[in-house]
Amino acid sequence: MEEYRIANPALADQGKIKIAWAWSFMPVLKLLQEKFKPERSLNGVKIAACLHLEAKTACLLRALKALGAEVMAAGSNPLSTQDDICAALVANGIRVYSWHGMTMDEYYGNLHALLAWSPQILIDDGGDLVTLIHKERSDLLPYIKGGCEETTTGIKRLKAMSNEGILAFPMLAVNDALSKHLFDNRYGTGQSVWDAICRLTNMLIAGKEVVVCGYGWCGRGVASRASGLGAQVTIVESDPHRALEAYMDGFNVTDMATAARTGDIFVTTTGNINVIRKEHFALMKNGAILANAGHFDVEISCIDLSEIAAKKSVTRPGVTTYTTHDGRSLHLLVEGRLVNLAGGDGHPIEIMDLSFALQLLSVLYIHENDLEPGLYPVPYEIDRAVASYKLEALGIKLEGMTPEQEQYLGRWEE
Image (tube, rainbow, N blue to C red; front, side, top):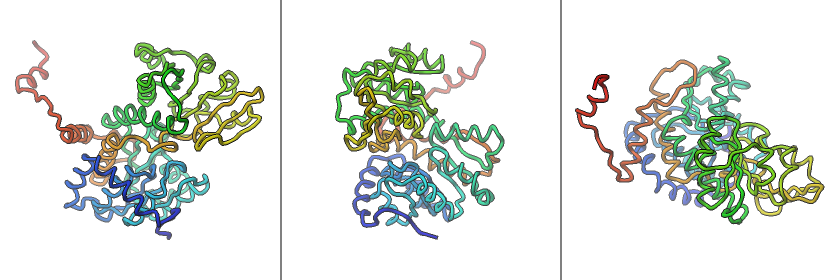
């Protein structure tokens, strides 16, 4: 079996510098590593991770190794993999199978290389690893104790598998933990999406008409940050409660056909397929920018874009311009892939400190407990502990309740 597949091992020193910077801003993950390292709590456990391979993820993988685990990793997105980070991880004794710009065949080939080591615990991002095991490597099921999933899209897939009764091992829904989705999905996505769009386009956001498709936690964050940058924001939503919430948060709310006529920048955050498609492209103004903040590159129909285009060209790194037969230019960012990671550095370090602390504690929980197959929430005590550790690191004190107050909350009589 191959120990690793990466682009260039000589990039390790460059990657180590980036990892050291991230580690210096991850106090919670650092605290957990220091707490559990003496026990070697994961000694000999084989952990396979399919994640975005960048500096913050490297900190999690190295922390797991410090706890004694045998760690192997593959990139969860061909454009988010950073080759210098992969090289640094390999130099640290972690098996890595990924490189920037993989084809989809190479991507799945790397997942198979990862699984050749018969992992016991999985850390997935989007559900591809879990799905592949169930579809093509069911021989591994007896060895797998469980795993964790950290994305909205991945949780949707796991719920569907669980509802059909085919999920063959326990998975913790890390994405649904309060310490994850309240901060990672909202503040992390909100900031990192606009960071990536600004990097890719070098355009001003103030004054632009921004259309955000979807008003879940990610959509809330993207819309809030767009408004803070001075944009006029319109929300497109299919759920009546979320649409009403967006309206009461001060945003314009309408359908896609209406929004398509006025938008300057479109951002999809739904996790669904073909959210922006041919009939919408036909209505857009010249110069519209299209970005996807969902996990998979299915929300903006690239097939439809190609069909309506008379010409397609790369007009700036990470920007593909489709020129329509009537002379309009529509600009698609990073091939419609996850814009904040394919076009930027992903979520801020301090946000991923929370998410990866949850991942580490969830891995320990899976290792230490025998659970039946199914999808489980992260235990509340783990979720609360991560938030408490973060507040402690920030020097923020909580107000404690008096015995009288605790007693009062437990009474039904005044």
